[in-house]
Structure formats: structure tokens, C-alpha cells
Amino acid sequence: MDIALLATINSNQKVSDAANLDVFKMAMNNCKQTGENTAEMIEAMDPNLGKNIDVRV
Image (tube, rainbow, N blue to C red; front, side):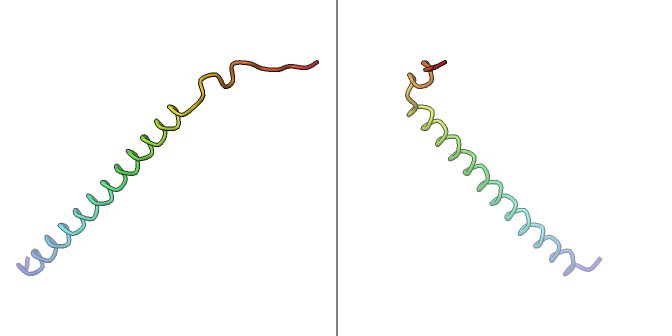
């Protein structure tokens, strides 16, 4: 094989690996933020809501 071709393939693989890692980090940060937002929503809920039901017949 040609040395220049191997160098090009190696360089392309490094760029691809870096891009994949960046996308993975973005996905992890998004999941973390979603989890934090969900936890805040749960803490903000009124614990008395939904305990009583008014029924008319």
C-alpha cells in the first residue's frame, strides 16, 4: 500500500472519531439537562394535588 494513502485513511479516521465523540458528548449533556429539568418539575409539584376527587351523581 501507498504511505500517502495510509496517512490519509488514518487522518480521516481520527476526524471521524473526534466527530463521533463530540456527538456523544452532546447527547450526554442533553440527557443530563433533561434529567435535571425533570427533577426540578417533580420537586415543584404540589403534593396535595390529586388526593381528593369531587364526584356528583
